[in-house]
Length: 427
Image (spheres, rainbow, N blue to C red):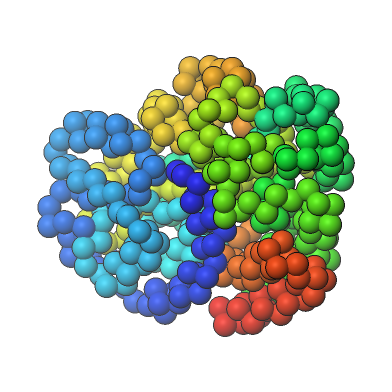
């Protein structure tokens, strides 16, 4: 949960190019049978720094003393390490996190994971966000993951800089004034015109990721055909690069922290967890930020799962631990400890989330992120999505950093994406 998270999400595509190894092994028997998982005894739990509340994980050891829970905070490339371990069939953890952006890949090797519906997940899912649970479901209805958190998106902005520009700083009014991308850009032009040192767009990638999340189809369709050259994708591209033509892009994607602290970034677009990025990077701006609905409609960025590898012997015990760690109250605790935005809507009513946030001038941010979480549209994300999308983000960088012609960049992005898609088995 730091500024590198956004870049990791955007840059995960290239890493995904190597994702074929486990897929090639997917026809083998699921897991390693009784190999014992991540340790010879007890219940090994893999997660990453900030992926779960450390306090809740520690408390689970007391809650389930007989299970001998052994947490392991895995650093580095979590997906690669999990993929390698599942392929090797040894030292597989009994419970493991799977990042949301990696779930489409692991969903393609479903036999490596347990169907949580066999232990009651379906009844729990019926009371929660259907779109989030669907991200971890296979075509034949197996539930591979129990959602940890979600990443509903919104517009973050500096109220003091908007007021300096003579613009409204009220969240409802800002949302109304930026309800379409044309309105957002017009608002941003006025802001930048009055306060030239501040920009409404941090980077082209920031805009593109939101717009793509609002489309009917992403880069690869559910029928495994390439859709990255569609009319709606071209429109998303044209809308994104318009920020460059208007001169309102700060091009601060690789230098976001200092730009946030300096006031170069007056408006930003991101998921709920991005609030922690901003407060960590710019603590001296506490009280000056606000949050409003982003243009058109919310989407989701990030949000992870806990899963049970099929090699786990006592699956019921593992599921009981997951259910407790991700109970409503513990999801509220995780928000308090690490700003992990709950996937369970019932947790949004807890005091941890309904109180005002001092960093955001006392604003009750749940009033924005809660409804946004309810409105996130379901969108099919192929296993090859990250790898294919990397071509577009690379070309957007060429537009903003190297002055490449946007039309040529689009042509090159589609050509590169098609090539990557074909190598990923996309038709």
